[in-house]
Image (cartoon, rainbow, N blue to C red; front, side, top):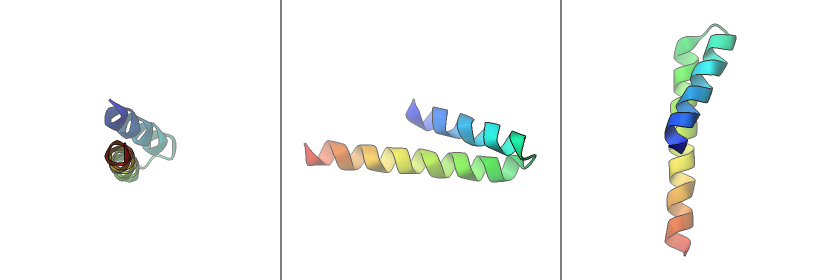
Length: 45
């Protein structure tokens, strides 16, 4: 869910700056970051 939201945000940012490809990269990067931090939180508990 959070991964999809991150990709959507990246696409919106990319659309605003008229660089869809950069937006995709930003979205995927944010998604990976969210998934990674979520995994770290779950392993700490």
